[in-house]
Image (cartoon, rainbow, N blue to C red; front, side, top):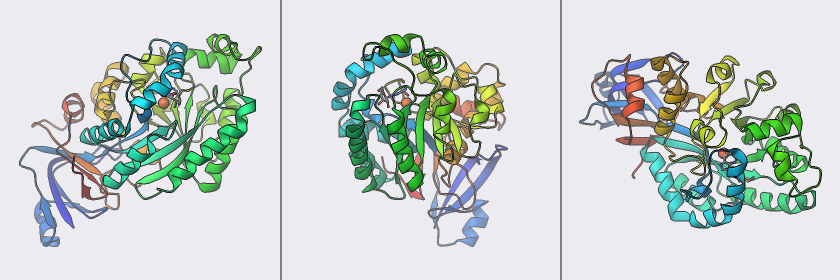
Length: 409
Ligand code: MCF
Ligand code: FE
């Protein structure tokens, strides 16, 4: 048993309660929340963790959408419009993934932990991120490993299935509490229905989490809704008369009864066709600015009752994998919110909401939840201002705990 004291605690419950001068008693899970004195009396043998600084304790961040295999990108990929980016990533993906060796991915994983993230959802395109992700999970980081399937060529279905299955089975060998194999269907424009069905049947059969990219660009919107636009021109390079594999509705139907994280959704209109219990939206503001030319209407999205949470996407469409940087970007773009209210919401969108989306027993400081939390040094500040001031100023953790164990960086 351990006890940790903090000057301030963000519980990250819906009401966003802030505790002052309280302590947690914890093993792998949070056991009690009370004054330090009471907890020390109740658990006299517990080890006391006390910082000499003025601190804020909050659930560690969950970043449910990364692409670590593209971590070597800077200056390589082209931004400003989706198809320009897509062409550049298709041209450079082999070279970029060769550059993103084990050590670079491990460095990024470690940096994420330093910036307060204990859980990630990694979209694995090739499987070259498997080894470092497994290592990180053994060192104390929770990884949801989404094995990606994609391919549009009818003649390559069998090869693609086999290659996906091999990667999935390789990831399954490492399954543990902190390493969770899952499935990613890349997108409606890139994944043949036979491949999508194959991967989603596997997900249903094994009760796996699923992630997919949806309606992120104007080009994709035009393609799925009207079968025209820049996507059509681009696909004409490969087939004489390309047609979309799905309508928005028929794509959404594939995910019926499957716990799925839909990433981007900036052009989504069919809010009511998503399942509020199982479906959620991963909002990647920075990525949308670089690729999509449009931001998510967060007010409208939240009104739909769906779980909307934050993700950074990869360094293929961002300059940082820190959820704090992503929150700062969000503060700037969602101008139709009260700033102090938005700050609280964004912190929940990096803790409680992604935990719910991934069905994990964490993301909140509450008895019975996994002891996944971080401690940041903060300055004296009134509670009303603290969530905003924390987002504006915080960079690195003082301490990070995952399942009750302190991470060594
Ligand atoms: O989320 C962004 C933008 N949308 C789609 N895909 C990716 C993103 N960042 C990386 N990707 C990867 C994707 O997983 O890029 C490749 C896929 O492997 C595109 S290949 C059509
Ligand atoms: Fe992505």
